[in-house]
Length: 80
Image (cartoon, rainbow, N blue to C red; front, side):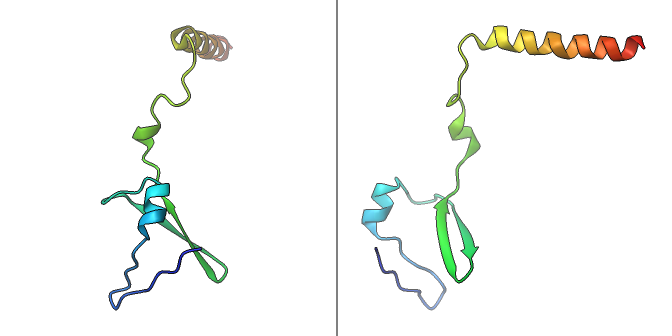
């Protein structure tokens, strides 16, 4: 557990040990979450950093199948 001090400007310093563990660097954004009488800080995840995390093998085939299902569904609806 780390102890931080609030400055006169309402700022805190995140200890180096914690910054290193969480790979925080200058300019990173954190989300402040109020929980009852507590405050939780967590890194804000940039969605562009997640690009490719959940890649699907042969994603072109999967996309073609999904598009065909969607097109077939639309054809059925418009045929009525």
